[in-house]
Image (tube, one colour):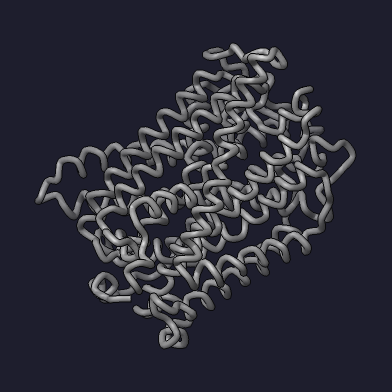
Length: 506
């Protein structure tokens, strides 16, 4: 690759900002405030704790990257370097066939849902899948083939993506200042009687559980930042990759915290859609439309950013016979012309859309109250089987984010064990903080998932008018946890030549 086509530090920072979900704050903020019973102080505390944990993770990455300067597999490569082949195979399967394909699946669909919430139109499930796959097709071919296209596209859409993160707080504080809305004042008094009409979930039994339960929602807003680790070889100075990740995470966290606080102060449910009810917005609807369109662009930016890392990742695996169809695609794959990687990425993405699209639309059911229709347009529904598809996307995105951090924990723990003789103090300190932080969150998720099944079953047993779909939803959530675990860890410990994946020049 020509030198001038490689990424500078600033371009890599933009890539981190683009790849980090970021706009997830608009999707998950209402879930955060529900988890803490409407107490703004605890919601802000969840953000602060999450940001502290994320910074510890990124600082740990910095020391891991120093030892793997030619790693083009990101956290999969770290599991190869620091852990057994068994954990490497699990990480590889997760990133190759679950993480990237599912995110290519859910984010274009979420973009369509945001447009529906904005303009109130209906669409059928198959039309949604066709449009979403078309978006992926565009990004995989053009951003995947040309790093310069991915770079320029990231600059443009990242700029547009973060306009809402700057504008929304200004509107919120302006609404408070104009007197259009009274600032919310409940900082430390959680009240779970008003946040749900179904049953108290496990996280709503006590504020400590609610605080822990809100942290995974916060982490969703940052998920994807680690994908940039696979771009070390695409940078002019590979050692700057860790600095780019740290700066990018700090920028995203600052903006997201500001947006979350402004929404929590200005709205009852912490949701940007609540702006629609304010006279200022209803008289100036174009402001609302522009904000929501820019949020859609932000969701597409995630896809574009992930594609750049995915192509480099698949190229490395193909060159080392570590992914399906490697022998067929190897001769058509190199870093300058990665057509084999593009073909593989397209195939996996198409298979994902075909299988998950049909299953989610026709074999799943609404567990997210989407059947009630579009909130700002009474009487309007999302379209044929769209409520099923959106609920299925919620389920997939939740667990993919959770298991991504499982893979990160394995890599960090392996790095600490690998370096126990050298005793790299910052790696041990920040790595231990990162592991403890993630493990506490994962334990809470596991216990909450089981607890919700028990509580929903009890609610149904005591009241047969209880909505059965809620009970089924908790059971499906638990079953999906088991399914994801089996997919990742139910395999034989295949022996491979570990060193070749780091020595190979792609």
